[in-house]
Image 1 (cartoon, rainbow, N blue to C red):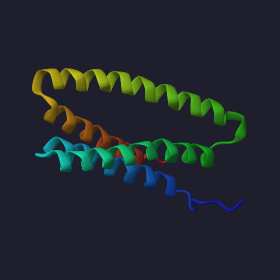
Image 2 (cartoon, rainbow, N blue to C red):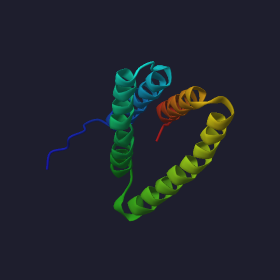
Image 3 (cartoon, rainbow, N blue to C red):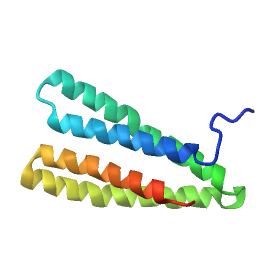
Length: 123
């Protein structure tokens, strides 16, 4: 079987690009003034965000040995769920206090933070 992603850093770059596109979609949704541009922003973010999971899986599979791969995937999934709960509650509070636009901007900022963390990772 021929590998589809070559090079040790391709998955990390793909993850960062997917986060960047999703952050742009979130920001565009926050600033959208009419339904058409808002719909396109939702499609942009919703199309890019699931790719992060795929790139993360590829990244882990290329960097771990079979004996620990399932454990690493499990720990990453648990960290993802904990992050969704914590950040989701924080974004909900922001939305309640300040409205949808600041909450969507915070969502984009969280994705930018993910880009920085992934790019600084040496793993």
